[in-house]
Length: 164
Image (cartoon, rainbow, N blue to C red; front, side):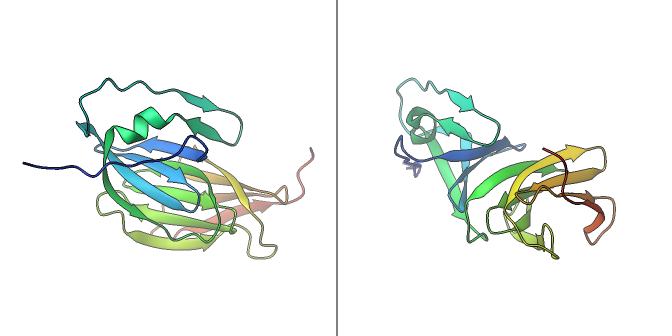
């Protein structure tokens, strides 16, 4: 008999980002990412979940994660993850530690780790896919536009001190 490992979060855990790839849900809690298989139920009871999102954070009820099978859990950030976005065959995660980590979707292996703004490190608050680029917004009111069409991800432009 196959026994699946379940993910258990208390209702006080803050889920900051949830994204869906072809085969898994990626759930960011604190500085870790947990991949769960939405097709494998750990228990037979009904699964009802609610996601409540504000501009920066999402709260996920305990029912969703407790009834789904954990595939694996991993981290490359030292601060809490603030945002995730799917870019082709990669997941990008942003963190309060000033970094953006690129993950391979299939193996969940770290592909690269980049700094949002090397001239003034700050927490990365948001990621947004816009065409062939990713926009990262920092706590220092900067936006970096990353070119995703090149092999080595590099900033296309940096905009500082944007008005409130």
